[in-house]
Length: 207
Image (cartoon, rainbow, N blue to C red; front, side):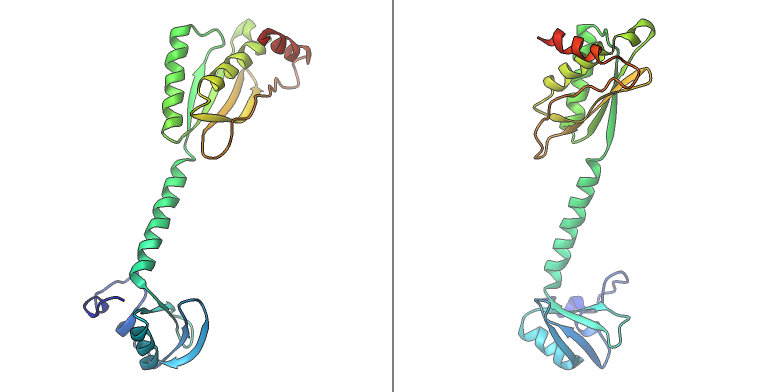
């Protein structure tokens, strides 16, 4: 129960508790959510003291105000924990981007892969873009195989959230960090303008 010395402390953004609730009567809710009914403020405070709990005003605009018996210190701690968890989850929605060329040399590939691995380790999603130029646009399977290799190389850190998809001159894939989702196999999408035989060529090249 909150100590009497804390009852009168100013807290404009916090609800009124215990002796700071100065109304003749309240609609009381028990610690487990049970409806006690309308009681005098003196009786509500007595019940709170007997249960070693706080009387917390949860609906000040109601007539009479609604108050609940609870451990206010524990309630504040749990609320702070939930707020921190919510902020942590929001940070996971950050999307980083990494761009590659379909004929990237091995050294550059290792550098780019390191960036992707670092992003995933930091809890970020990664949008991987393969940029085609000139005649490269007629060989989308090159981009697909490169994305497949990258996904396999970082499989311990992340999984394919959005399969490779042709987008104009680019091919895009989205990787997400592991939580409980298992890595799913790649399924290429070259767009409507590429013959289906291209996909067969890509599959043959992998064997």
